[in-house]
Amino acid sequence: MAKVTIDGQTIEVPDGTSILEAARMIGGPLVPPAMCYYSKLKTTGGYCRTCIVKVSKGSDKDPRPMPKPVPSCRTAVMDGMEVQNLTSPDLLEARAGVVEFLLLNHPLDCPICDQAGECHLQDLGYENGKAATRYEFDRREFEPEDIGEKIKLHMKRCIHCFRCVKLAEQLTPKRYHGMLFRGDHSEISTYIKHAVDNEFSGNMIDVCPVGALTDKTFRFKSRVWFTKPEDAHRDCKKCSGKVRLWLKGEEVLRVTARKDTYGEAIDFICNECRFDKKKTSDWVVEGPTHIDRHSVISMNHYETLADIKKDTDKHKKQLTNKKANLGQGALDPNNI
Figure 1 (spheres, rainbow, N blue to C red):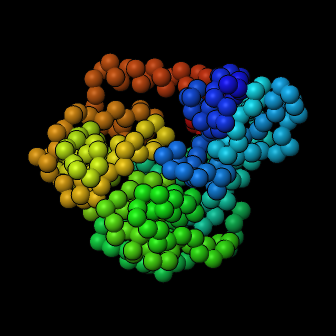
Figure 2 (cartoon, rainbow, N blue to C red):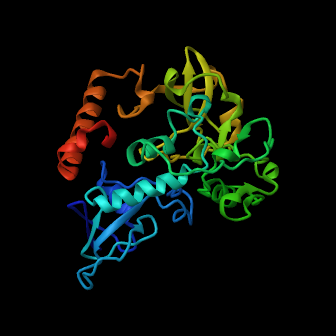
Figure 3 (cartoon, rainbow, N blue to C red):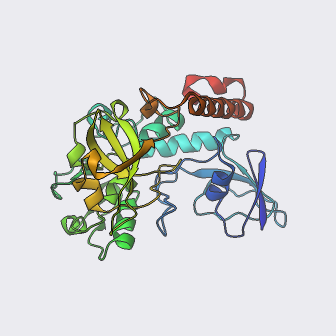
């Protein structure tokens, strides 16, 4: 076991645990953001650099600080390590630079993007980015590519997190697609039409952190904050059958996997559950999905008063802790 201190909070974790996973064990606002890391998929992480942290003390045996920010998803903790995530101004400035790089070619088409309201890049840009960019060149362009009637591909929005590649490699029988070319000409391609022609291909929609891969059956039907998410299940021979229904009245607009606090699918679901079962009569509805009050999806989403109070108290505590870490300016809207 190794003890690691992150922003003043100490936790003991098994040897080999990454800094990011250790932070997630603590929870709260000190958890670094992550765009490419996905705990359910092997060998993810280390691509986007949004989870960088400052290691101010390497370990008890070697207390020297690491010379530059390190990706927390790929760096294992060592006994006595001290890490700064929110308490280092230099680190926050470096993370803002990473966000600026991610947004260089990403089109700001949030008003027409189906991912709006549940986009990790939106949250990342608001919480860790800047209001302006120094980029003066034309954004990259890609020819539209049709990959089937269920999934819409927008390469212009892709941030090259590799999640869909890892999922196709590990969850489907064969890997048909990957990264082509280099630099800002890189693109996810090569027989991607074949990659989506399997029973679990729809999970690429759930793992994509931006609007590069979206559900065509949900396209332009509604904003996510106007829908009502409900947990439901059914007997399915192909997957767990545990899903999240997104309702508008009694109409099922879309079906997704249930996701945890960090936006990762708890169980991957099959395409039959995702695309073919669009009636409430197909499901056993368990009740409203619990939505964090920090999310825009919580608008018009009503639960019991006890649940709302619990979530509100949790959010207030997080803001108080953030204020203690960052100083009196922590409650500025730009820092929340």
